[in-house]
Length: 161
Image (tube, rainbow, N blue to C red; front, side, top):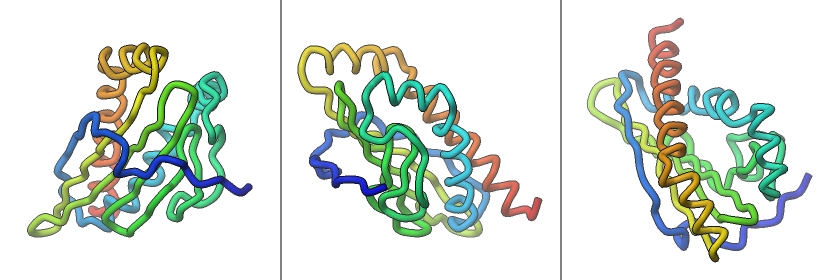
């Protein structure tokens, strides 16, 4: 399935927040752990249902998440630079948004994974949606949980388990 390019460039979306976690594993292990973590967190029955209700551009998981054009419900890979950056973007009737994962190399066999959210919420309904998702901290809870799972998976992978 062909996906039309998102109309809003990543850099035009205002920053919402950023969460980071240090991982006792090399960047390659974090990169490898990122994809199953995203799949388990974002490709669920409830996320597909929510993507339909919100009328997201992308409503199913399809293609390869390692490359631009791969999708998860509500998101499409806009940019992928192994093993340091994965930019996912999406849009629906209330918002245009991006979730950008950056993997920073640290001394030793360690890295830091940062999850940056950028979004715009146009109009009154967009403002209400922002209130429901961002101000209630639902978004923070989901992103932090995803980072903790990524850390666990990457560290387990680095230990050879």
